[in-house]
Length: 194
Image 1 (tube, rainbow, N blue to C red):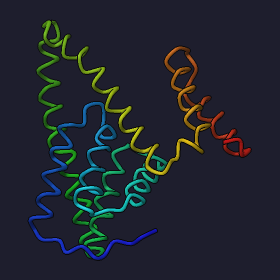
Image 2 (image 1 turned 180 degrees about the horizontal axis):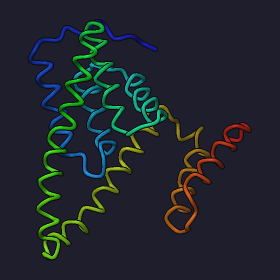
Image 3 (image 1 turned 30 degrees about the vertical axis):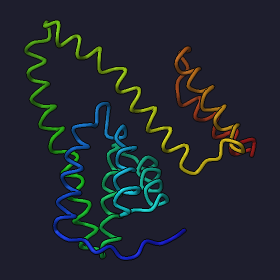
């Protein structure tokens, strides 16, 4: 794995990181995981504050740990901070990104939830709820695509792609609990079939 040179962060960089995470918070329709492609573009491709491996490892580690899936944001902030200096900057990065990702969406959700509860009979409220479903699905698909294609070669990993498509089809058509399908995938991988 390549290493990043020590980043030379200024206060303007920390502010930009915080403001971007506030923006990500407002884009996190369906959960913060739906903003992964944009986070990747910003942190890895545009700013070069993280390597692909650091980005993917942060998500994988946080998703494997018990607790809310927003933990990957803390790890991304921690890794940016570690690349910028050390323990203090890692803590600063973690606090900034977590505050940025949680504050706007939490405030908006609280206010909109109270308003929607008071006005649940309005046609516009019902239409909004129905209209958001395809957006959430599209954002989750794009997140899965970014994570799956980062370290994958479709020519050699076609069984994985086939298994993914089959699982998605089964989940969408049948009432099979997702844990059974995850267990089947784990067994296939454990026996070296994938």
